[in-house]
Length: 77
Figure 1 (cartoon, helix red, strand yellow):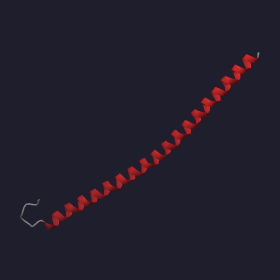
Figure 2 (figure 1 turned 180 degrees about the vertical axis):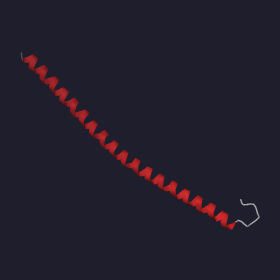
Figure 3 (figure 1 turned 30 degrees about the horizontal axis):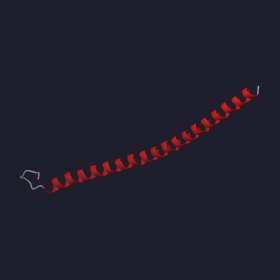
Figure 4 (figure 1 turned 120 degrees about the vertical axis):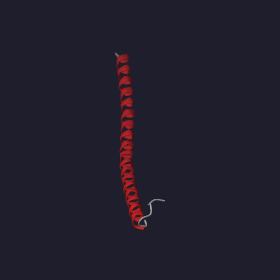
């Protein structure tokens, strides 16, 4: 009977240790995922802002070319 209880206690302790490692790893992965999700949103907003700025610059450049083009001469560089 003593051997049975000793084996049972060993298995319970091992299982508890395994669960504690798994819980710690799960918490670590969840926190990393939250950080990566936040940085992904920041990068997306930055890319959208850069795209909008580039679009505005291209529109301004086209408008400037139309204004500076002499009448009767071909437009373009």
